[in-house]
Length: 145
Picture 1 (tube, helix red, strand yellow):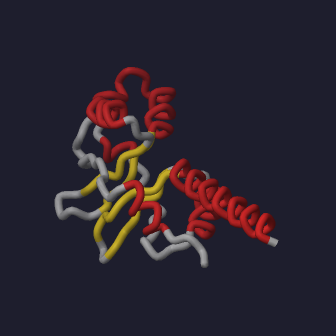
Picture 2 (cartoon, rainbow, N blue to C red; picture 1 turned 30 degrees about the horizontal axis):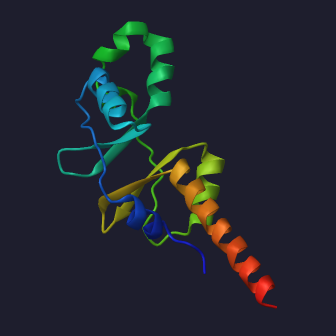
């Protein structure tokens, strides 16, 4: 049976650090640095997912705007077309999306609300743990034969 996104969230937790569209990039940088994360979902006033902003978005904007980037609003740099997943999506499918779309963070949506976030690191760790378990099971099976 394929591992699902909910398995990662069960281990990782459901806490999601967010920003608002009007937050300054300086504030977003503080959020990213203080929480040691690479991206932050941007939530609108109604509580919906408005976008996502990553370290990469900020670096690209720094190349374009220089120091002035820190004064811009998150809404001006965030990606508005956000790839999302559900807790029931398989990790294999999610890995394919992340690889093909070149994205590192995917918000998890359940019943129309933000339920968590999964990073490529979370996915890789889960797959490595799964493979390690399979190897151990094979070793056990072979040693019992």
